[in-house]
Length: 533
Image (cartoon, rainbow, N blue to C red; front, side, top):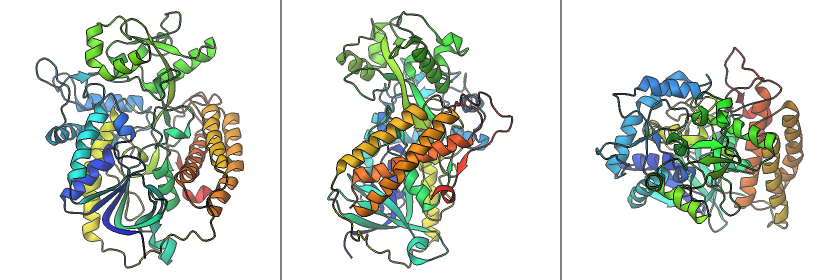
């Protein structure tokens, strides 16, 4: 058998959660293989600007305040015990990264410089300038690449998981590895005692997004096909402020700018957020995104503006050096002119059903980070709780995997090599491109910031027409990264639509003009594989 790798643990994804878990497991003596679609440092984590939300100054802040802010932003859909778990473990995560060599920004007194972002009632965002994610990944990546127990396979794309029930007619649905498309175009069989999906989110399902190109929902689709239900996939967060520029794409303008005093205005210089929320420009993301969307539709303008001109210019350069530089390169001097911004798809609050420690109902399969639904975020993510979740979860999912591995013998079955059958080389890649573009436009136009029953029905009808064509193409032609991603975003798009159709109310990030109210009964939306596969 060729192209086979054996490992104790296979990790799919190289964001903060995946790499941190890999390092933790390797230090326990386990052999870890990390598979990532591009370079190891290409991820949503690396793009994160704001920081890690955690309580540091207990003189003015507290765990209870952070918990309450998270619950308020989450519109009552959070799991209170999950929220408490992540909030109370935040300070340990910060200490861990400092021990690894992360240098978080300090104030003149030598203490952590705490930022404030939308939805937070206190300053509690620990940051490294305005490139926190980049700095975190840089340090963790270095440790991962130097560790002898970790093998990193860059430019490799996971296809599907291997389970005992799929190939060996076992009643146990235990996951024992995955098929992976290599950088040479060959399909590898990676056999592992445990598999961790840490693939991040699904922003590229939408036409406009802050996410890098790798975020096509692969882990969501792969885990769902393996048998894990998804929860609250209708809750897609649209970041209110993405730079609107003809030459600069997917540039996120951090919420921290509003935390430091930035104000949203229209093209005439008029503020408008006071019409929508008492916190004005510091309102939770879902409210700000809908407000901007409404203002743009009412005015017909292509964008609104974030005004930083009333702040000290030297402070702006020091506090936001990366954003300042990129804006200036694009002809926007934030010291003297407002920044044009629009909303775009950002993070998912839903995901594969799991515990806060990353266990799923499938033996041998674990999840961590944005791909997981733990109950932390509810119906809307509180700013900078994302890196908090990734950091805390990485530690505890590694503990769960280590315990599972110590108690579980390697599978006695030997999975077969990938069989392409009579599949041919792709003959018309334009079909993939056309379907890719169509899925993303359908999602943006019909399943975006504001939804309706009619829009959702139209979206599902169009997606159903495409599914047959994509499935047929998948089985008739040899797999490629583009084809695998198209297959995955189509499934994830369907999960989002079907979840949205199940929720007969407006709550948090999900706003349906046909149900402009909140139900008294608060419940999660669950879609199971049995419903659509």
